Length: 147
Image (cartoon, rainbow, N blue to C red; front, side, top):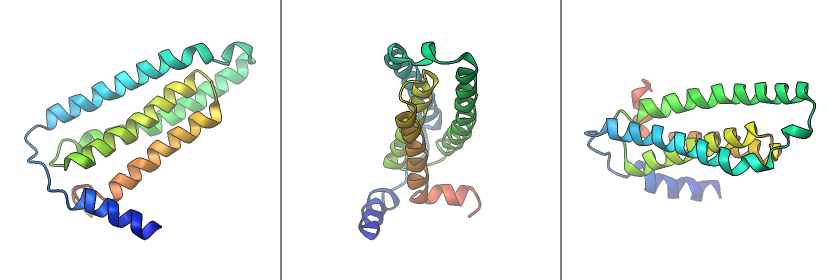
């Protein structure tokens, strides 16, 4: 199964010709807009399901601190994606990066409301795994990092 998945992704991502790189500002602006929109929409949708009202205030503070740590991780990942979008990149790779980081950001907004924490955590780490998977097939990433 892994061999077939890698061959499909290899054909879709690695062999896609690189973009000309003439619009890095537009790609970066689209990323920031997508992240902000995703976070806001998720917060609005999940806020009615918040479980924070029935929890001990100390537990709520602890859980919010843990979400804050996840936020630092997501910020570092978003910074790497932001950097990568400033260089020539194939469109499927750029879309993959944007989708994966938006999944993690949506999960952070979801986790902040403390609604369904296990599912939100699964989505957060799934988004990070998606970033790793897309990065695995991004030849420009390893070249840009000196690999």
